[in-house]
Image (cartoon, rainbow, N blue to C red; front, side, top):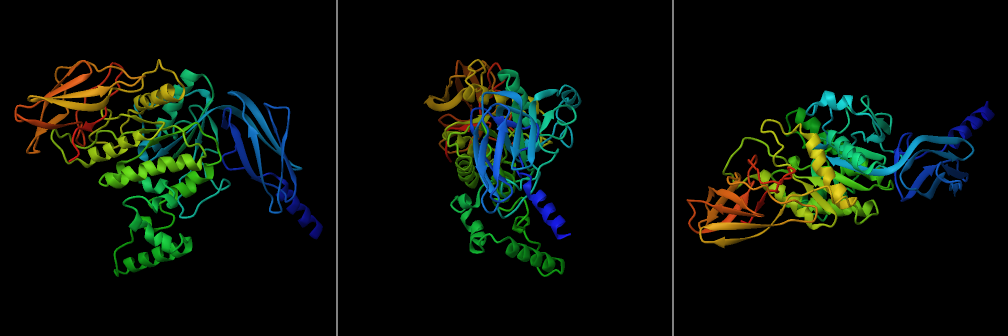
Length: 498
């Protein structure tokens, strides 16, 4: 009996354990060094035979059964088989080599093609979603105050899946439409990782070590630092507060105080991003910010810190990071100079100071009644245009409208100047542009009139004889029509810093 148990134990340990993201149907980033961490029988020899190379790669497991190996991926192609062996074979099949992108953020990135989202024409979109060279991987929603490793990434859909009418309905619509455009233009396999959680703030996606030094987060991080991010300690504190609240002894604890709540700082980085840091990516796409409206100074600092840290953790300091600016939302208001939504959009745009970033302007696609606009195909086109032009060098694909540069005052007019980046387009000429407001020396804002003259906008207001500043699209839900021929919109901006 003892001999049988020992045999069973050896058999159990013999099968190679791979990182969670390594499943059948996966896509690996082309022409990269793939670092693979695994587990096997202690002190065993682990070999890998790839379908694209005759030479096998091997690694020696240590006394704990841990091993690491590196293999170079070829140019886009496949399907291939990966065969791992330490005495028992573990085989991954239908593996493609191509371009891999990770999409993250909150509900507008999470919004599925069907499911609770139901994008425009979702039934037709699902019917035509037959793209066997596009592969989908959806990370399961898990939050934790402690970091998870590569073996503890939870996922849905059984791992990587081919894109078809059965797999796409519950997948991120924006990730899907982004991938479609890449595949249509590049004609190489595309893998997209759907890694998001609705209603979550930027700090949940940022490493705790980074948050400790972010403006506006230091006080909030002190209790975590003092208790060394101990999961059991925070769990007990949270449960005690909940028990007291139920007895009427205190208010309920803030939901972020729970160590496994998505509002807990760094909790989504720990459980949903950290396990992926060794998996090579081409770039990130991001749609988030609604949850941080009302705290734009912190967002500005945290968002930029997060971008740079993600790149560092994924060991690619220049990895493309393309994001979506918040859409117009809530009731329209022509004059709303204190709009918190406008301030958050500005905080997002400031991240463009970082190298290899790009912003898809979304100021015309929103819905006053719905924080989740259904126009995800068009947004996917705009977001993918940045990648196609900037990352893949397809200069035929226009990716941006003119960008605010500066202004001059000429009598009672303010003349706005714009840069037209390479890959940009000129403005559509319009004699009656909405969305502009103007202030004079008294700093009182008034609805203004505006028109285009080439790539310049001239703004006037009969109530302002001596103009001092102009804002465009500066409201929760502004009406904005300053755009190019291919419907790329100028991002909201302001000439002042009041």
